[in-house]
Amino acid sequence: MSIKRNYSRKKFLNLTVVVPIYSKTTVKNFSKCLKSILHSSALPKEILICIDGPISENLKSLLTKHKSKYIKFFTIRKNIGLGKLLSRAIPKCKFSLIARLDSDECASSKRFEIQYKEFKKKKNLALLGGYSAEISKKNIFLKKVPLDFSEIIAYSKFRNPFNHSTVMFKKKEVLNVGGYKHQPFFEDYLLWVKLIKKNNYMLNIPKVFSYTKIDLEFYRRRKGKEYYKHYIHFNKKIYKLGHLYLYQMIINIIIRLSVFLPLNLLRFMYVKLLR
Image (cartoon, rainbow, N blue to C red; front, top):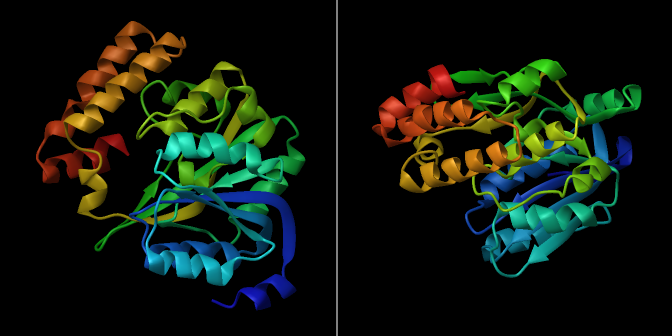
């Protein structure tokens, strides 16, 4: 990975990219993720690697090798979960614009430049996302999301209106609604709802901003009693926030009984109905 060469020849943006890692993060995936950031058409001035508890020695070695004035670390010694990690990390970000990216995802080459320009043009914009490409062994699925604000609000009643790995947001607006909270599997979704409830202006644009490899493990994480329990808790929380009517919460909970289907059927449901 030729980091110095890219630093010397590219323009920089007043932007922080936040990348969480933890014990299951692999060197292979993280290397691809970091490379995608560093080979972007415009580079963020801060890449904040958020370390949630112990990580492998190989990953530590990779981080040490690439530490620089642009790549910084925020470390929690004991694993506390994504929501709590981000709740502590976001206030530490240097810049007012923050982009989310997971360690097993890759940013498209012009993502940061395009989003940054949108924020400069639309001064009232609080959050901006886009499409995501999910790559399996046989297919590439384009995960589309609603584009304008009214569509986003309606869609958010039943499904996540943003691909979290594509999102860029204003730090101030996120902190104004209390930031990230502990909500396993739904940390980002909960934040979007809180922003909606405060009438923050949010958009998606029809461009692919991230690439994610999916396999059977991807679906296993969205299956079973534990996932369903967290989904019910999340729906109760946004119901109490006034985002859902009671009948909408009940519909959501019934539809998500699909998490108890056999894996192949769940995969079909996800591709055809839940994506």
